[in-house]
Image (cartoon, rainbow, N blue to C red; front, side, top):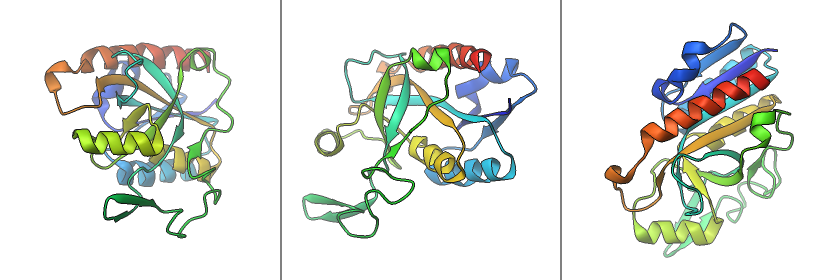
Length: 210
């Protein structure tokens, strides 16, 4: 089985890289959706992978998700793709520039229609994500996006990875560990080391199950 592991930064998957078997290719894209979409799509086009995994950290809107919890993001969206109309946000679908079910979207979201049959993956809680260029850190913008999309987690790369996998027909899963609560920026409250450690342990088990 040929496996692609995608991450934005090397520290997020350092434990996994150290023990990755020969049939696993590791792609470090750099931070952000543009770099992730371009580099992941190129990798999945040049090589046919049996499965691609995106591993990384995320912030949690859902306070029921404890810091350090590893989640399977099965639904994601580019939350900033649209226009501002005074106090109202217009989605790209509302602007009639994209159909809500126009491939690879389903109901305006990127969904994972057939996650790989992986025992470790199946034990993870499934969550809804949003992907952003600017992580949320202001009460009003947090409240607005929460009301509009009801996200549980956010990242800067997740939907871009899912887009690349969907357009290339590559089976995939996006797996993230919660490093912080989405709130006014408070790095002192983050548990980044715990999130990365838990993510590494989960990712290693997933590759053993693959």
